[in-house]
Amino acid sequence: MHRTARTAALLLLTLALAQGCALLRPEQPTPELKRQAGQMLLVGFRGLEPTDAAGQPLPILRQVAELNLGGVILFDRDAALGTPERNVQSPEQLQRLTSALAQSASKAGLPPLFIAVDQEGGRVQRLKPANGFPDSPAAAELCPDSDPTAATALAAGEATGRMLRQAGFNLDFAPVCDVNVNPENPVIGKIGRSFSASPARVAACAGAFAKGLQSQGVLTAAKHFPGHGSSTADSHLGFTDVTATWTEAELAPFAELIRAGKADMVMSAHVFNAKLDPKHPATLSRAVITGLLRGRLGYTGVVVTDDLQMRAVASHYGLKEALGLAVNAGADVLLLGNNLEHHERLAPEVLDLLMELVAEGVVSPVRIRQSAGRIQALKAKALKARDLDQAACAPQTP
Image (cartoon, rainbow, N blue to C red; front, side, top):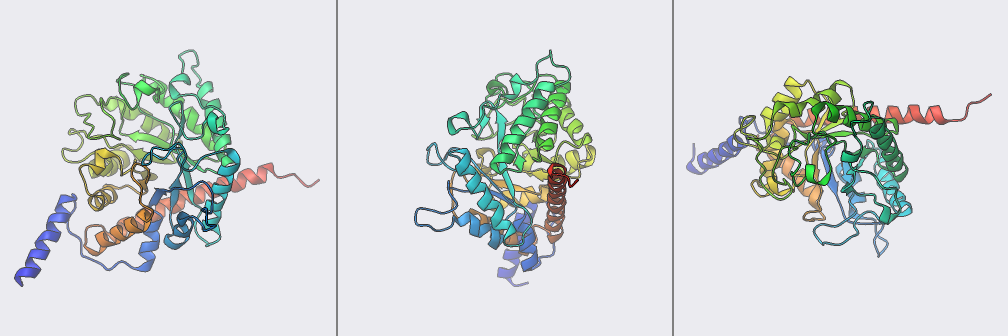
């Protein structure tokens, strides 16, 4: 082998091994494979209205059609700019925006778009009273011991789901299934995001909240697998190691929601646990996603990553490497909030990186097709539920 070719081959092998997978036979990605990979992307964007000040459609609307984009996530605040407005201003404005997003997919003959939001309640609610929406209580307020049937959480889930559907959302990144192991946890316990310190109570109340969302036609995402409740650090800000604090009891709420069909998606955490994987955080770990979640817990549905721009990942991995690891770990939907830092062309750039990984033999086309199939099945389920709901509400002919 020529020296230059041998060097290139060694570099490619090193990249593949670094990503925790054997080198595959490189394949030139087809346009159809790229379309399927587009469904794996769920990205954030800037803009309050479907058109900008010059009357031009928002770039995200073009990208939905051009890339066969799988979904979008909306925020009320622009973290990169430090400003209070990004996608949410009022109920009327939000309906215009989400309607345009949904139509951008339907007019192009594409699968329905995941239109997602983090509406847990309490400190994590993007639809706030300040913008004309009802207040959503924190999870910690919804699971009192005096409510053994979790009726409070169910009612809150129904109310949240009703509000989200009216605003045009079909996916809520909730409920939080993290157990309140560490009440001083800066990103979970300390801000009231966990339902309880009891795994059984978390399972009951998170399950009830999820049931309420589903009853209103809103998909759920149980998070943050395999459990973020014992951490002492915030994975938005950097490396978060739970090796010494995490226990298998934290799996119980996820296992129960999966068993009961209340986890339309499961969101992975960026926590590191050397007992589960000595090299990678959960989001990038095949041992955690494919081994523990899919193998041991038997989950066959859609896995969505937490935001890949969070510092726990972004500070330790390049974007291309993180994408390869996440896909090979078994993740289906790659969440990029595009809010901690913003790039207008993030979605097409990420899609190009995925195709490079295929061409280099790091990611298999089979993995992309597998994820696209799971996503298609979930979207078909959501459409069926919507159609049944509309039929039930339609006036009956005498």
